Image 1 (cartoon, rainbow, N blue to C red):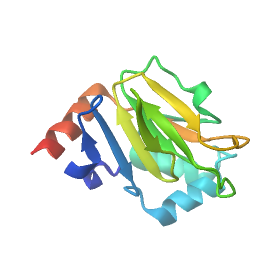
Image 2 (spheres, rainbow, N blue to C red):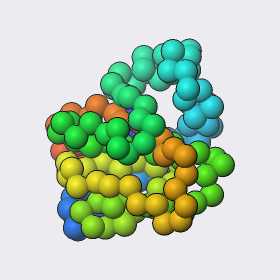
Image 3 (cartoon, rainbow, N blue to C red):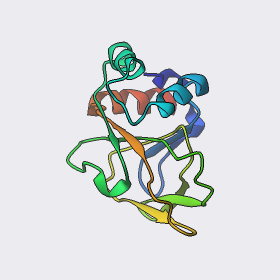
Image 4 (tube, rainbow, N blue to C red):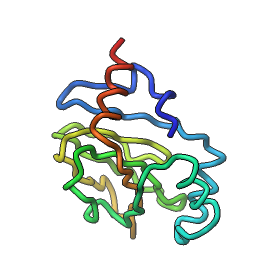
Length: 143
């Protein structure tokens, strides 16, 4: 994955430790995956799986999140037609729900907060990040 693009300003300690990183994944590649999000058997997704070797699941909405994971690694796939202004609450901190943005944390205190009329779906990818990978990223960006 493009974890090397995560910089120190993406790392935050309050109200809980987290990484909030927009655009660390190439926009052109993100757009191709976005266009094929309804078909995870598409060759682009197979290539993504082969290239990055990280498990993932497309979630239709935040209510579908798997909170049994040690690390919550979320990649927002906000619909292009969704003009609503929504956010994600992380331990009470409001973070914008923007396309091609990653939220990575060990906190499970994550909820979706629509600020205006709720859109029909709020898709995201939940990636299987190991705790060690998370710790390695945090150590790198704290330097």
